[in-house]
Image (cartoon, rainbow, N blue to C red; front, side):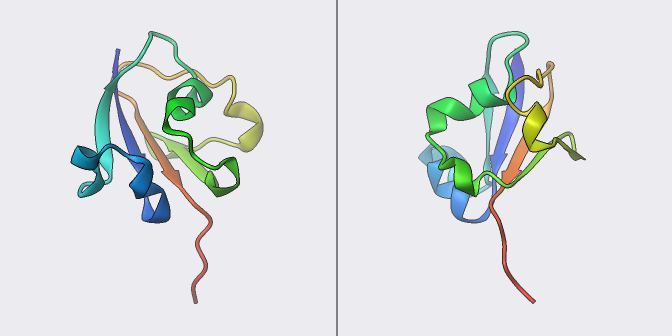
Length: 84
């Protein structure tokens, strides 16, 4: 199945070069893949995986290992961001 994977701010460097400008890549993943399975090959430092959204809806940390994605989903991840 096909999903869109987006990484923002400092995490964008973990995307392949062709996805860095737009912060997104289209991925073909196994049907029913979990968030954890999608994220694993990108070697993201887990301490930087802070805000996780599927189709704009927050996914709490305790659900990320088991939450399954569906065809066409958009998985977006933000690191902790400071500002003011």
